Length: 267
Image 1 (cartoon, one colour):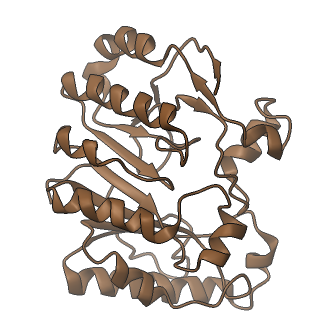
Image 2 (tube, rainbow, N blue to C red):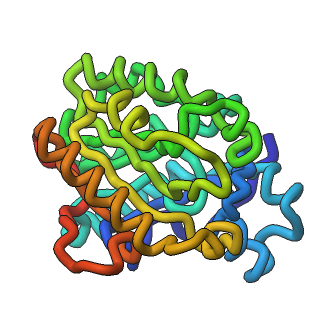
């Protein structure tokens, strides 16, 4: 696997539910075609020359050294650190990435900093040995493997992701599921309730629309459609005692969507 060196690692994020974050890989082999906002930004700012270049990830080889330097300085300011916003900490088929992610999380936890992680890969069971203030999530926008092969061609199969998350949940870990970017029916016809039932064990569910996609934008009454689904998620979570977060811009016709941050909550 190719590597790069960076000058810094931890930084404060402007994302609605984020605090601090780290992105210790440049690029992502999952090759999501939604399109991926991180890839669009990487191409715009010259960090990736093409889709193919983006799909060839580069591990930041000095990640742990940077954390050793930055954690003592930033610790008073940090509530949580999220892995990751522009790459995947448990990239499917890349053991080097997963190993670096676990070691980074160990360092953060040793400094009493909780971590949240989100992946389209397979969350390793060894995460259960880390702090139970951490929170682990998967992205799950469908159960249809033929759609995954189009939308997330390099990512882990959906049911393998669910199984890995369920193992961590059964070990007492705080788990969550991001159903975002959820596709409109002119991309795939599917039943959202079936997805919700598959992950009803999770502590938190996040739901969000697909952005930057003309096909989705052209779906008739798409705002009304997303509003209806957002309320379906809210109702499901209420009925099952699951924390819920509706992403900004998804529930557009009313403004009563829950907005709890994705952070360890001891649920």
